[in-house]
Image (cartoon, rainbow, N blue to C red; front, side):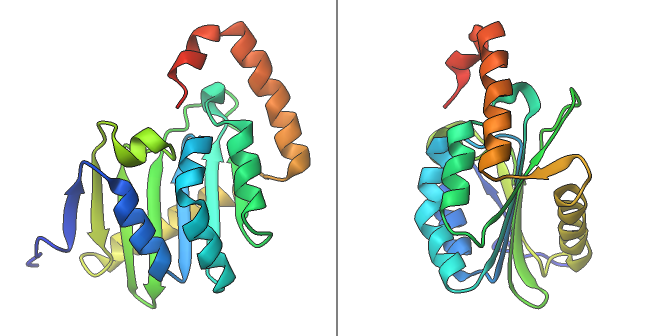
Length: 189
């Protein structure tokens, strides 16, 4: 199979530009990221809000691994629009470190971005990050497998729906962890 350069791209800077363009044209948006930071939510907030208002499906799955995901980021996500679906992977000490952004435009059309970028301002704008963006037409099988794997994680029994109650529970664990491990707080974006 011959691939053109525009179908697969290495994105090493300003991932935010590609994400916003994809969000603005997608009918379904699936975000799987280890960590969600308030700064990253702020960059995507307006685009996600517009997408939800036009009827796009938006699902976000993140994790509690090492308690990096910020409770305020989760609160900000669920306030974007009542239709957004956000779930939190309860790692129970198991590493949870995926970073994938999937966008469906129409049947069999979409974009898959996989790489090193969590949902944070530095990852989206100026950090040293490597991501590969692939048009779904390059490999419909790979794109479909990514969608299937996302849904397996999203609906896994280890995930919980993010709402005010689950964020309050998570925040207590987050604060306890950071009190016991203050050295990690300096790395948070």
